[in-house]
Image 1 (cartoon, rainbow, N blue to C red):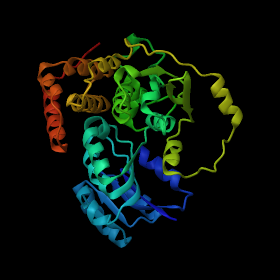
Image 2: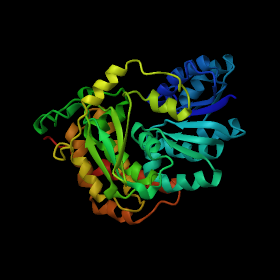
Image 3: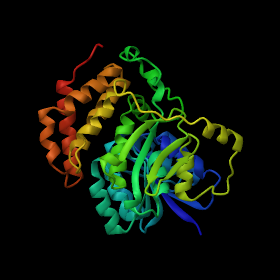
Image 4: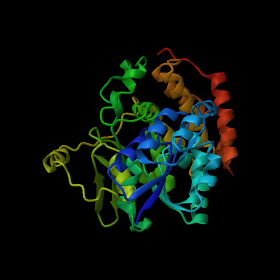
Length: 390
């Protein structure tokens, strides 16, 4: 029986990996693809996979390409609000691969339209998990996390009682600067920061990996998704990135899940495809297992890990402020407006600012609340940013 799929953000790295996983699979039919403005790429995707409906967010690109799409007999729509016009009954799967807070509204809109939602959009989960969970329950939609770490945890604790889980460990590669001294970091170029030793990822997440902000976000995600207390979560550096999560259970049992550094693996398993594929080399896998290393991260080198001590027990605008500060600062760094250490120092300084602290006792009621606080955070950052020289 054929299954259908929506991919939100098909032109990004997760979307690309999803399409690679589906290349030799005829059991899943793609119903809809979306992009912000990479219309040239999504046109090629739609033609190759014979997708009849495409959504683009950028008005200029929409106007530029709508005639070409019409000639190719592909329906091109402007804006995610059109998703309800396209999807008339629940599809089997929806993958949200959109990056940033731009992925929040599509997440909420997609839940009623799918039986299973696979989310790779960290920002949606971090800023709006309570809103997402409420929607999931109302529409009886299954949720599967798509980050390699959270997918691994999900697989490890599936069908396990929550009270039997004692501790969950997230692993971190340490990024490209794991073995660099702190003195070498201030003027690291974006080009060097983007060279992740193990993974091929988008620019934004590659910088987050270098600063280890991605682990801060993953820690918050795990806490929310799996309803785990802060004290039962921790982070260890694992340079080879082969083990993605470790779970300690009552009864002195330990489980860990490993796989190669390729997002096609968790995506394929989440979609239930390529189950017959065997390991290309058992010896190479055994070699990796024989050379596993784990150690605590150096917080002087990765000061953003200290933010976890400030994380409130209950959901609040803390997460929105943190996400927005980081997004804006990483963007400025990639545009060479600030240096590498200015990302970390501005976040640590501003997250404790009295202007933001008033929001940490408040909980968002809807998406507009989150977007409103995000906009206020951007404005405040741009007004009070400091350009650190060292």
